[in-house]
Length: 88
Length: 447
Image (cartoon, rainbow over all chains, first blue to last red; front, side):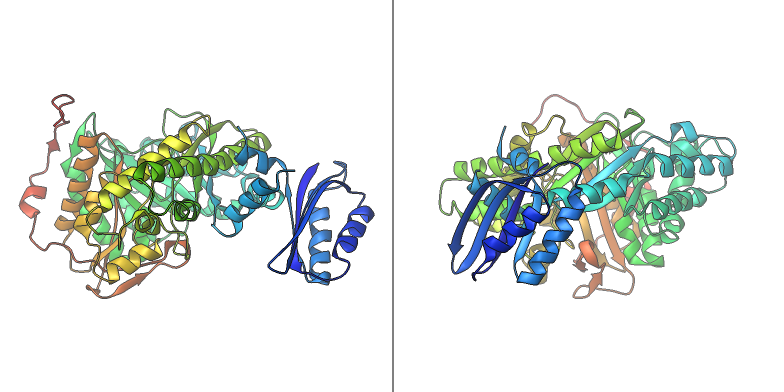
């Protein structure tokens, strides 16, 4: 399953490390990363994939928990929706 | 990874309030007809709870996995006047209750189809259904009804127009909020996923998935970027935005159709406002260049918007249907409410706007002392515009008992609140009471 992960929040030390560690724990592979600071806000978009055996719901809930622990806004959406809107 | 596209899509959903307004499952009840009303209702309940058992679950899963809000899950059924006609029941309230029970069991928001199609005349079940409407819609919480009183092919049934004025008054006398569940149509469409007017036409497949999209905020935001540019650019911008919004509808419809193993019917590419800030059709018209909706030029701006939405959306999905265009419900659009309260928008201007918008006089509250004949007159005017111009028109008005201009009717949630609007008090009673049938219009000499 391919998905787009967005992480937005106040910039601080270790955001990438924490997110990447959690993804590794969940056995999720990172295919692409784009990260920037917008008006002091840390903004990261990741394209990730994982085995169909792990349910989307469980991944989403682990990442939402991580977002709450680290005071970051973490969202995950399946990738197909972006193609559907933007490509013919 | 195309980050710009990803950011744009996320913004459309989170900031500009793009959503799937409804996934509506259309279900035929023709095979539930029985001369024993009780048996028919059991079959209806059984069929609805079987066919739609996974509808809410599937919609919630799509919403969660793809991050696109699906605001309503709904069901439309074959007009009940057809289904109930074979029974000898004195009224059809029990059918509405069976629909309501099934809808509650399934967790769907609304169920439409407590309807009759009487554009040319009444059949056995039509009169009974129409008479049952006030009680049926008052004693249920999820059932919606509609009556089609005219069509371009068959003209306008003035007897039905007269009766519907009384039905609307009766319904309002029980509770004016009930009036939001009743629409009186001309040229009603058979695959509309939007309420209160959804029903499942007899020419449709046994069970289909129809999707209604929305996103006035997305169009408004896109137009903010082309301020002062020629109107051609406005039209192009709306088309491109409508395309993207409709792609979302097509995508979600396909997912739902596969997951439920039900054929995908149509995408209704409508701009449906909500009372939330930034989700308004009136704001789009103002962004095009009007000081307030209602100003001279409003009808032209709306015509352009409605047309560009259709043009942009048509290529974005396999099958377009439903009402497809821009809705102008007063109570559901924060900027419309503001314009009415400021005295910038009146019923006469709204009526003109309905000649070019997707439906008609929608969610308009009028004084409680507005006569049944005046409401019939409004229905007749609206129907004639649809019949002559070969488009769908509708009336959903709320004559609020005891209230007058300056008061407000509260509906709550997505239905918002409606300021009472003044109605011309000259009586059309003698016209309406003539009864009979307004002939279908000539289809040539279009001037």
